[in-house]
Length: 323
Image (tube, rainbow, N blue to C red; front, side, top):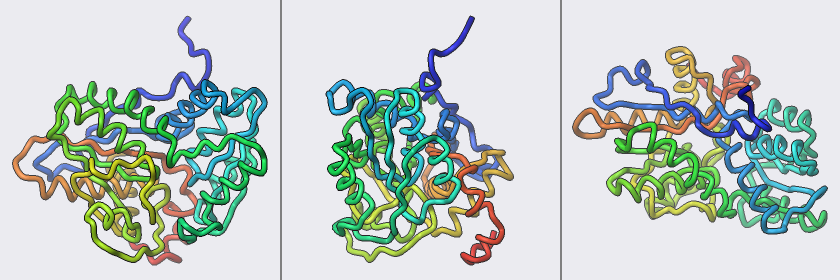
């Protein structure tokens, strides 16, 4: 018999797929790392399982305890999966920007969901991360704190990075990723750079996020944007910004158009962050000198959490998005 002891044992070892149709006119080879094929549907399954295990080892999380986390949805889903297996109560704090599919899924998975207003500055006590901290204190609970928890970075250093290195045979020239917590680009970037220092790390950032200006050392004013899960108005503790080689800011319309192209041309049903990241990867490949280089784009999550937003005609019309 061949079986897993539990569903979390299936986390990782996601496929690397050549994006040969959407990238057919490129001089370089573009690949997508299909993180939406993790059991909970996103890259965040990796860190959810890892961070909970570490909290147990450190004694911060004990049998029957409560976990609290601020999330754009996917980390919450990963935590809900782990919490159900291990018997923990989970409280997740989301902003009103998060699509209803994710909210409903979290509730179905047994999470106590607290939806708070979005658009607050990081320093504001009403910011969703600040509210999660206060809830954890009031509940005497374990705040996972994915934005500053170093286990987030380690999960990618020990998992995602080695996978990409092996799948590319070490012949990777650039990694393109978004930043939500900074764990993916930092963890994978460190692992690969230790073995191939010339690898470029490319930040894909929604227009309206301040991360692009932070990497360039310039000032800017943030603005609302539609892409979920990546971009920020502050530098997460887990982001080693010195690793980033270049940043490419992508407008919402381009991100959403590319997400739809990935579905139509590659049969990859992905979320808005994947659209943003692949859009940035396409731009990067177009400007990259020479030919035949290997570029890997992280595809963080799937499209089922976006049926009421980027895959909904009425929503697209309301937001002025033309495909």
